[in-house]
Length: 75
Image (cartoon, rainbow, N blue to C red; front, side, top):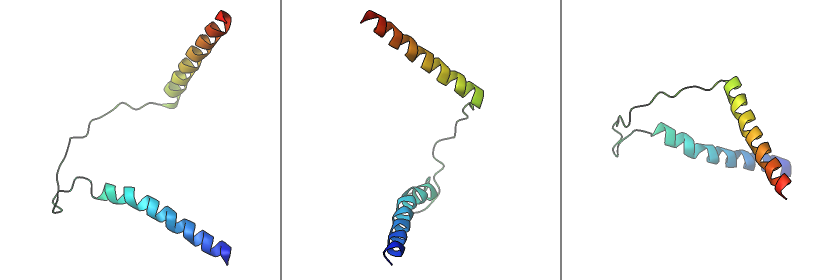
């Protein structure tokens, strides 16, 4: 019985946590009285593929490793 109540309670909490952002998205762009406000024009952004993302992470890792090695040699 306790497990059922716990499962139900956790599902209610998750539902309430998801309800806020969902309602915010559904009301996005509406005026005070429910009329549609076009809002800002969407802007196209470039997509990043997996290989470019991995190259960026490798560059950050290499720079971090380089700085760590320089600090280690100074000490």
